[in-house]
Every structure is written in structure tokens, then in C-alpha cells.
Length: 375
Ligand code: GMT
Image (cartoon, rainbow, N blue to C red; front, side, top):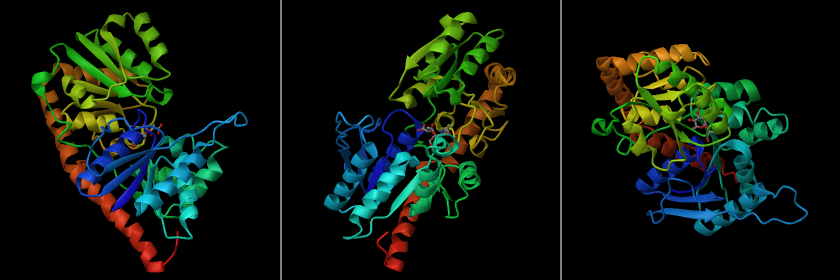
């Protein structure tokens, strides 16, 4: 198949999932065209069957807001026509889904160009519910030829919030278990906690600092904070206030988290809400047990007490207690690390999930052949 993929190419789970999906599809012989405003992170140049088409948004003094959605739609239609794309697959509904709908309509006189929207999280739970975006998000879901959601939680929320009637297929996120693998010999000698995110308020990164401060009352541990975003300043400030400034290292944005994760003993994911929690899955694949909150879709991934721990949002005391258990009880840590790796391999490895996308693409393409429609 020839697939056009659009996502946010910056740091963030939805862009990472889209990029890794494209790489896996190309690996399996499909032709993949990324249509985005920048080269997606984690996409190295020169990979066979992968193409990248930049969306250029020209500015004009009249435009207070350059119309990115229109430039994207034009580029999608142009690439679809030139390379004979079979379908478009957009990640994160806003505004990618609407751009795909416009591209489809631009192509309609010539041929059918179906599009699939994958919902990732805040496109539904936060941004999509904002009054200014609600009607267009609902419309874009209803008009998509296929909709997937990265967890059952998000599927349920989408129906509750938007009252949409079309099928939403759950295809969980995945991890490349060859790339993300345990490396106990690389584990840091001092106990190491790790957090990876875009440091937005929903990630509650200040809780990571609180947890470290409590843990350090019993265990000599340090914390690596990978990523960047609006909460970094407050987190640095809090670390100094709690007297753990020296034990928290802010690493900035990291391109190769698969090299970082195996060095840690525990992953912290204290989020207010996660539709899935990709960082937890990446850690589990590396045999690093997550201590997370049971918010949103995380319980579909982490089984409390088996391959990680789930505690209430904001309950940093309980989260710190779980971290201490893992850092001080080696057999427990080893058991959970093995179980976490097994969960990643048996339920979320690429060879389990990518075929679900392939089958879904075929279904969506087949729908058009059956009813001979142009959309
Ligand atoms: O929704 C967001 O704010 C961002 C999005 C992203 O691009 O990082 O994250 C969502 O998608 C990830 C990949 O599917 C999920 O692992 C995250 O749980 C989800 N974030 C939230 O639901 C907050």
C-alpha cells in the first residue's frame, strides 16, 4: 500500500507513534509518505520506502494566523496525486483530520482518497472539548473513513464526549522490542529514577520531585528528567526548595530514549491523565517497572502489582512508597522487570499491533470498492 502519514513531528507520543508506525510499515514493504511541517523526530534520512514532504506555510501581513490547515490539505492532495497514495492516515484529530477531508474533496473528481484518523488523547480530552474546537472535532470524527483510538479508555471518552455513532477501532500503541530492550549491565550504580515527557501540566512533573524527596529519606537515589516544556522552571525551583537540586538532572529533549531507559531502576509517570502512556510501555520493554497513576488508559497497559504499580493521581506518598519497595527489594524488582518485559513482548510488540493497522487499512480501502464511492 501507499500511505500518507501526517502527525505533529515534534517531541510527543502521537508523533512518535506515527513515525514508528511509518517505519514499521516501510519495513513490511509498504511505501510511506510523511506529510508534515518538519522532519519527524526519530526519522533518519535515507530509509528505503520512506519519503518526506514538507508542508510550507507562507506568511502574509494580512494573516494574523498563517492557515496551516489549508497548506497541509493542498500538500496532501498534491502528494496523493503525484505518488498515487491509497490512503491518508492522520494522527491527532486537530487539525489533521479536517485537512485530510479537504484533500479528499480536492481529489474526489479523480478518485477516492480515504482517510483514517487516529485519536491520541488531548485531541479528545482537552483540546477537542474546548468550545472553539468541539464542533469541528466532532465533524472530523464523523467524516473520517476510519477512526482508531490508542486505548479503550479513549474510545469510551470519545463516544461520551462527542456522541459519535461511527465505529472507533481500538488499536493500542506498540513498542519495538528489538530496539527497546533490557540492558542490566548498563544500569546505573546509584539508584536512578527516570521521567520522560513534554513537561506539560497534565504530566504533573512536580510530583516527580516530591517523590524523589520522599524516597531520598530512605534510599540514596537520583532522578533524571528527560524532555522539556512549560513546567520545567517550576520543577527546577521545587527541587532546590526541597533540597534535592543536586540529585535531579534535567536532560532536555532526548532523541534516543531507548539508550537512556535501561540505565534506570524505575520510571515515574505521575500524570493527571494519560490516554495510554507510551513512556511506560517503552520502559516496560526495557525491563524498567513503571510507578504510574491509574488515570485514563494506563491500566490497560500496567497491571498493578504485577508489571508495575498504579496509585492515585496526586498521591505522591503512595507513589514514593512503591518506588522505595522497588529500590530496596531486589527480588521484587527482578520479578516486575521480567513481567514488564513480558507484557511488552506478548501484548504490545510491533508484530502484534502493526498487522492490526494493515488489516484496518484494507478494510477501509475495501469499503470504497464495495460501494463505489469517492469518499
Ligand atoms: O495528547 C497530547 O497532549 C499529546 C499526545 C502526544 O502527542 O504526546 O499524547 C497522547 O498520545 C500518546 C501516544 O499515543 C499517549 O501515549 C499519551 O497518553 C497521550 N497523552 C495524553 O492522553 C495526555
